[in-house]
Image (cartoon, rainbow, N blue to C red):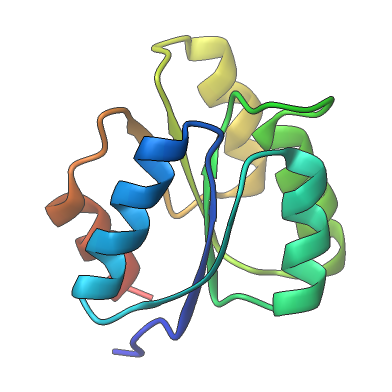
Length: 120
């Protein structure tokens, strides 16, 4: 099993982003960046070349996480794990064509998240 080297966290809730960063780093992963908008996610994915992206669906900025993921995936086949605070089936259906590694409803269980990440 390949251990993920770098993770990009895309989360507009600062406390959630910090919590995820600290817990993932404690688990031995390297978080290359945390950003709050889809636009920043696209730029960082290109610049930092993460091994995986942990992407919130509802973000600050003009584009949501699914739209950002579509743009990122058109240039790079980086695996994406979606997370959202909403139980909307429409969102899940919109995310499906991107073949995400996972789709989590917040709060994200770190043990389940690590299982998905370690499965890469």
